[in-house]
Each structure stands twice: as C-alpha cells, then as structure tokens.
Image (cartoon, rainbow, N blue to C red):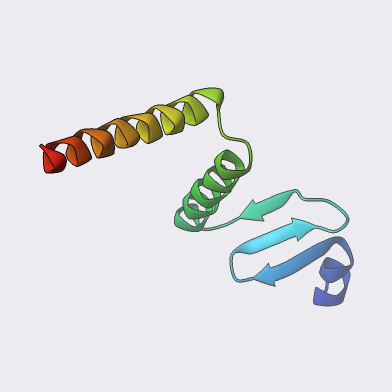
Length: 78
C-alpha cells in the first residue's frame, strides 16, 4: 500500500497519532502520549460536567470561608 493510499483512509495528525478518516477513532503508537491524552480528556470532561458532589463541596467551602470571615471580623471588633 502506498503512502497516497494510506492517506485516503487515515489522518496522520502528528507523530504517533493515526486516525481513521471520518471518525474520532485513533491509533496511538506511543503509550505515554495516550496516557497524557486520556488524562487531559478526563479533566476537560470533569470540568464541563462536574459530578454533583463537586458542586456541593464548592458550596460547603464557600460557606466555611464566609463563616470564618464573620468570626475574624467579630474578633477584630471585640
């Protein structure tokens, strides 16, 4: 199979990343690259769609911070 024929079926984006044309299916030849890609993808997905517990924790931290600020202000005025 010639290079021209290969490029008819695959996208060769960058070294180590080979994808089937018309799909998101890829073949990674480098395990380290794949691991980094997966970690970045998972982090991005979690950022876009955080689990409900993440929002609850954010709210609890904000509440704790507000309570601490009130306590600090009351100590200053005493």
